[in-house]
Length: 540
Image (cartoon, helix red, strand yellow):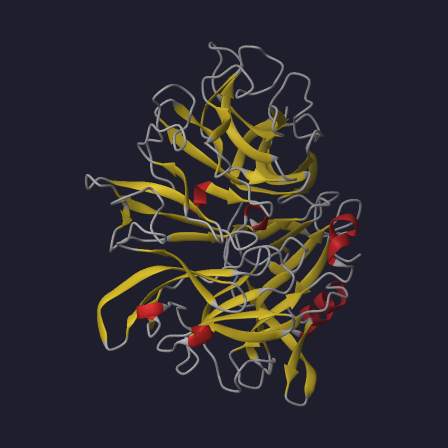
């Protein structure tokens, strides 16, 4: 997928008139802004600077931000139309670390950037340092969960007790550890970090924190213990460290990842008993590619699994039908029983591009996104006359690829009459197969956010010249969009538990520059009820 970050869009009268007319009826409303005139319940009436602003993977209006303005620094959450701070340095009580007993006077002394993401239920997780404000020598870093009322410590360095990694005596998180976290549902949290063993060895450990229980180890690098190992062959072990870019978490608290092991690479489900492979290299059984060839095996290059309906994942991988064949790439859907093909070059063309006589040339595997029964990706094709063309496809589980858009070509798969797709930037797919994509189109290299709805022509839902609603002290006023952008490139991965700019209910959070009120974050929420979004689409 071409990936060019948008630049500011000059407003001219003709463009403003055209885009505001075609960016139809999607109400955008600011939820925060740098200008003190942007008034939202819970926010102090002052100019603001902020970072780490994310829409929760559930959507539901759950926005998080790390304030950097003096006096209001710390993590804040927006829900039910109002902002509230939940973490602040130098204080005890609901905004403090919540330690008890001899540590009841402890306060937060420092905190890490890049956190504050929400679980599906709105609980949040962050990394901070806490200790006695009068004697900081024994202050410790750790992980906290905000349960929407108070902060609860769930992991701490240099302890093998309840807040330790859960591996037993003398297993600890080292003092200089870099915690990775992901909020789950129901207060659960994934903690990914290096641990030190009783023999002073350091290895990567994935732990699940469960409210009311001790921390539960899920997998440990170099361990041959069945509870923590790949379990493909006797005595095998995960041989490479992993990060959250390899992991996905579902609303049902299922955890999947693409990992490397001494016995091969593949896709595993973890944190649900012992690690269990869903797909693996060199296997012709249920862990191999179910392409109708008994000798077919996966060879390498598994991408991070993208969850669909609970218990289902989508992934790209390299495979070969027979030992004498060259390796090639395909898109697969694992439904818990088999790895079924969705896109690949096959003799019958069932899993091909379904455009003219084209076959797949290459897949842009990093563009894979999924939701429910649907996944989508960009790829390049070649045609029988020697042509090469890049485009966007979506595919339903158990179905065949559907062409959505072609770059550089007008007509049926262009954005509208007389225009062509130039490049895509941010993208998301909803569980009904509708796709949201920010794109440049030609002529004039115009930038807009588009809705690619199944069975309907593409349409702009945000563009320069459109109005955004700004809440002020005297009421809601309209401002004119001069430019907009997204913090993240590529697909929004809310289905894998990652907070970004799109949520599971179809809501979208965008950075907008307005002609009068400057930089704001504005949100659009589908008009139809959240429990019907996947049936009726973005606009009901």
